[in-house]
Length: 256
Image 1: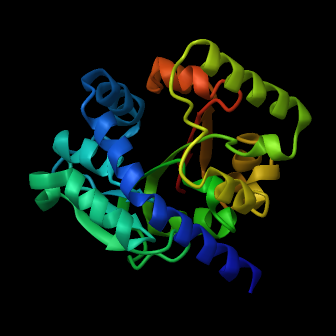
Image 2: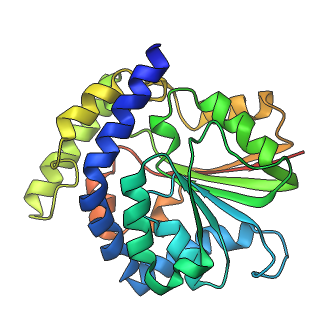
Image 3: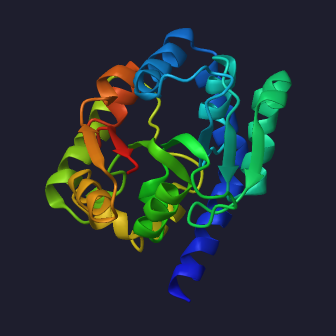
């Protein structure tokens, strides 16, 4: 019951955030260097298969940033999200590229795909707000082909709620944002609501990405590589100032 209650809260929050988050993704997609940086952080990890044949699953697509980015690059991704409003934003952001993307409404822990379907799974800013990431990581391994890879971009977004050192760094970020007179990404629509939800989410307390690496290996992934500096390559200067306390990492988990 606890997981179902928190899941409903998460879906409700992101449903309300869909329109503003969709606008944020549209801003990102307009920036050539930003798009190129994200592709460069993923494509070298893809298996050597022609783009038209590569099966890619974008889990937690939200307003479709990864799905659109990959479609622009010649791939034909499947894109999954648990909220219909986010999928509406993703289709709108894709525009004519929608014919290259197959959208599905699904939960990250229960994918309606056969075993060994995908060569690559990608996700961004998803695992921190999962009620049970281990169930999801196991499910992702199931749908990956042997040797397929899950490429996970995330950060310890709400660790400051449980760690005094991280909280002090988070507060310095807010001060630096104000000093430089840039937009504060941590002030906005229903931010207090997500903080309350995050206090109940297991990943807010975990030492990441070390925790993820250990769990992925325990679940039977053949290899797990962690890049803790990927934020330097993919974030804009505004993001680097806003999120210095919570640097983005990349985990690459290879299926057996």
